[in-house]
Length: 212
Image 1 (spheres, rainbow, N blue to C red):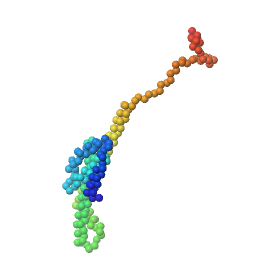
Image 2 (cartoon, rainbow, N blue to C red; image 1 turned 90 degrees about the vertical axis):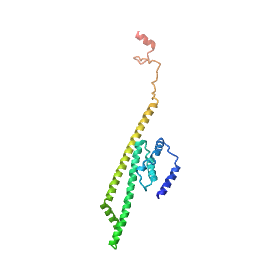
Image 3 (cartoon, helix red, strand yellow; image 1 turned 120 degrees about the vertical axis):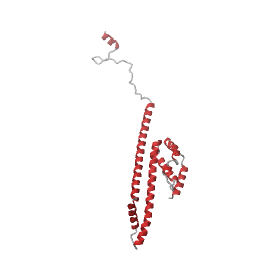
Image 4 (cartoon, helix red, strand yellow; image 1 turned 180 degrees about the vertical axis):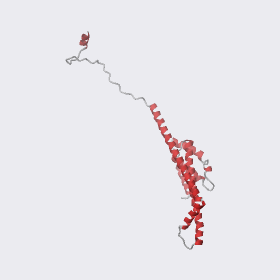
């Protein structure tokens, strides 16, 4: 799918949306106006699409639903790292393709026949010798570490926040819950009669007579 088709598709899908349904979603949506066009100026370079970068940022925000500036910053770090990583992929592809053309011209000049994979092999060897590929590899590894570090911190913050929200909810429910009532034992109004030695019930008159 071409870039323009991706943009058109994203616009069409966005037009079908009726907005966020949850409170967290509404809070996140209210922060989108802050992120639009602000971070992209420090990440997107000339010839790159700010619109595509914003689509990527919006997709991450929609998935992770960040709450507060700290969570939002971590999402932005992830997107910026991934965007720069993809830029390195594009640079590597361009360098290899250019070097393949250079090596093909040399091979055509020096040899009448050679293996089709030779230009690619010579291209990698030339780029490695120049330091271009090692430079790209080091930077890609650095961006990958930055991406997963931000992801780990984001997930941990959200786990702690959700755990705290549950604790607050439980405390609130316990405060408004009515006290539990226990059944009272039955009250017997008739005094128990004392048994005599022969097992007969002692009457009240007999009891008073015994006591006197």
